[in-house]
Length: 406
Image (cartoon, rainbow, N blue to C red; front, side, top):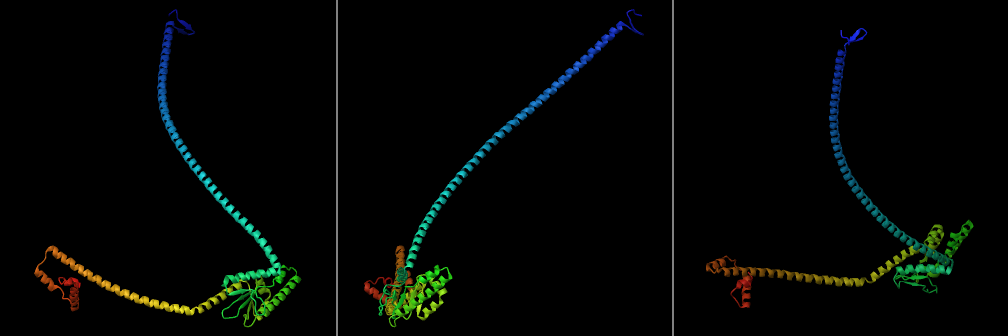
């Protein structure tokens, strides 16, 4: 046995074998290390390749992303420009509409202000008219408070109605009658006595009746109206109804429609008294109606007066119509004779044209002329006599048919 052997208990180890084992183990370790290194290198190469592939893929994706981003950027820029243009257009339209609306609003405001100024002017004018009317009403109250002025007021209204409705000469104001009484107006009726109109109507009782508030005051006012109006009716009948000089009916003029209505509504007894006394109570409207009736009567009388003149003028007009008819008949005869003369002239012109064609074509064949003469219709005796007479008058017998007008 080898002396260099190493004993480990019962186990004996040979150094050479140990060296070989260590060398083998070292070789094994080296081999393992080489395998590990090779595996690591292969793995790293694979990883590098994978990394490169990933890098290229990332670069490709980045390139695609860059392209997409660029497209998105371009789309965003275009959309931004379109959005900007659309916003600008909308702003322009809004600005235009706003300016137009402001212009319209300004115009409407101006028109409204002008209309308002016109209305204010109308209101000012109405205010002035109301002020003037108030002053006129005050003046009217003063006039109505005075009996003489009130009579002048009624006289003025009555005269205005008469002057507007009747012609001059058909009426007289403040005329004197045979009993020295002077009515306010006389209307001259044709072929009849004059019609009297009185305008001095008593209004004091009606004014007192309107102002009365207590029953006692109203009764006193009613009694005063009945007394004043009844006395006035009797006075008109006594003063102005003259047989043969005036009509047996007179008109009593009431210058107020409201007073006339109150009289008819509240005082029927006075109306009956006036009817018995043949006094007709009239308001301004009723007087205008009566004036229009009298105007129609005057026109009818004038028409009757002019009836003879109208009949004479109608006779002259009838004679003129007869003379016109005779002259129209003569003119009709002249037109008929002219039409016949025109027909003869046309016949002669046709013959002249025919002879001109013969001369132009030198057609002087005697046989043709004889045949044409035989074919020509024979003239009546009256026409032949007329042709001979015309030929004798003209002193030329070469063309009797042309002159005869066949």
